[in-house]
Amino acid sequence: KQEVTQIPAALSVPEGENLVLNCSFTDSAIYNLQWFRQDPGKGLTSLLLIQSSQREQTSGRLNASLDKSSGRSTLYIAASQPGDSATYLCAVWISGGYNKLIFGAGTRLAVHP
Amino acid sequence: NAGVTQTPKFQVLKTGQSMTLQCAQDMNHNSMYWYRQDPGMGLRLIYYSASEGTTDKGEVPNGYNVSRLNKREFSLRLESAAPSQTSVYFCASSGGGEQYFGPGTRLTVT
Picture 1: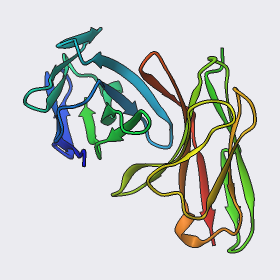
Picture 2: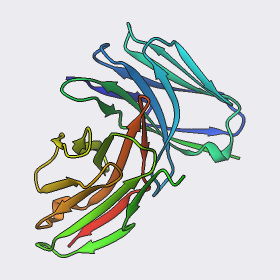
Picture 3: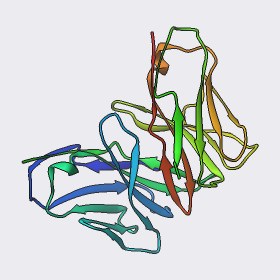
Picture 4: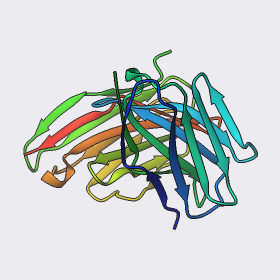
């Protein structure tokens, strides 16, 4: 059974720091990995999608990497800002009857001025 | 292009009452999903629809029914609400290997 773990569960940093959020999954038979952001009381916003043939994706100050063989992904946030404060969720796409996403529990990030 | 929309945003029900959560997407996606999100449990899949006219159970389907009315709309029905169904419900659709979420419905059952 696929399980997704995110470390750390919570993180509090001063503005300007570079951050690394970690995601690990138990079964390397995934075909995509997606990172989401969730603000309190809101829905999920897709940040980055890494297809299984890719090693990384970049969007602005965000960079996500994927190593399927070791079952790991990292989300790198450069020069963090208070507006980055949110919960970040990692999810892997698997197939098995139907294609579905398996979510990690998230990393709650607080960036203080 | 509104993406995925959900109604209502908030709802309070008494135990035993019924209600339907509505979801629509305008991205022409075949696949649609209903999740619930609870503290400490993360997001769990309730039901899934691969295409119009088809639905499948997810991880936690008990107490729920769904209808895929057409390609755009996918509704979730609680026939007899229970306090254990207090949660935030998210609808999503997927296309191009990526999933898109609605804003959620916060449901409280007393």
